[in-house]
Length: 161
Figure (cartoon, rainbow, N blue to C red):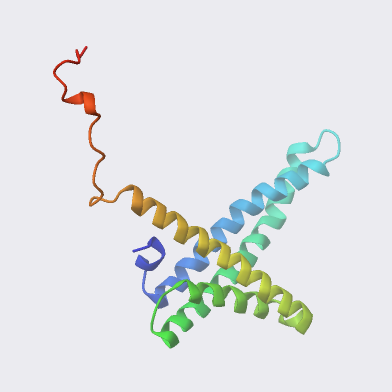
């Protein structure tokens, strides 16, 4: 069973995902905005410019990530409740719906593009997860037979060092 499907049950998962997404946005935003502060810093004010950029913009990035994560998780839990099963199709559909709903004020054309992009990104993530879990499970298959020893392993005429 994949790690994604052994998480908290759905109502609690939404809060977990909001917190995780906020933390990822905060850390990623801090790194990104520190580079931005570095690039636009006046001479002699490098550190101050980086800290100012981090303090003013990283929290906004964290909140945007939290909004995406919360909406994605709420839609995912709704699809689990409607479909009565948890599979990668729920995540792909949730990514599409989240992308569309977050772009709703930009019009139907942008909504459709965001929905397609969200679905493609989640399909790629789910595909990589499925491939890696199958590969890892085949590596650690306890029922897999070992290859036989070489022919000279039991040959008494071969000297062993």
